[in-house]
Image (cartoon, rainbow, N blue to C red; front, side):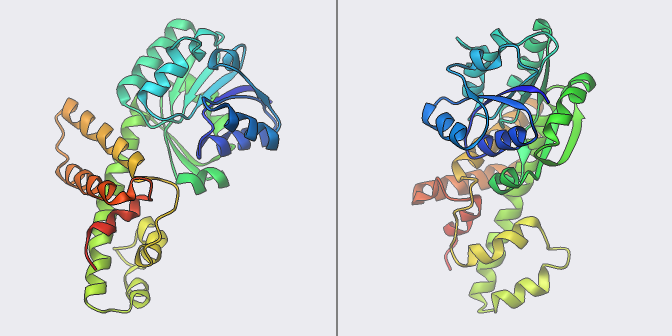
Length: 288
């Protein structure tokens, strides 16, 4: 059993914290919106802290799952941030999807203060978090991974140590680049099948067992055809993630023409009122 702090109880963080509590750990939680922390405590065993610093004090590990770089900076290095009270030898695990730059900066800060850090963005969406089946891509030292991995096993189907600090975040960028391209292709294929007046169930049966098969096809072909787009991972979040990838590509000199184009398509869907719809709502910009 470990003493843990969990900071950020959104759609991903709340179920991850639940799995940690159910695994027998002592969990102290903090959330910027206090009502969410109170609601979590009402359902699970744990303690609510008033600040990230209070939550992190004397814990074996501190885990975060917040919104973006600025949010992460506030809860770690800001006034009343967790890094001010983390004890030497502890491990910091960040599940937020953020820039590789802040991941590397936090790893350096952690080392200078005598504790460890792992950047560990996740894939699998809300369902993966709820079911404890997330895929986690990790950056950090071998020592940090050895401390973090036993905790992450409570809610992961796959944990991969990709490389040093920041490698988890750049791998998450790879993940989002792949998803963007697949969803654009799937959107065009669906609309093409509809325009051809094909039986969509038969088309799915014919193509989903071959080279065209993907997670998105298996899980979203039918819902996209029925214009159902409420599955947790919003277009607003996808645009944030693609922006991170495009920024990093500019820094390292990589070309992402398809990603830049699909990001523009997502901007169109936002203007259509789809900002909080699932990423598969990309199909909305294509006429039936």
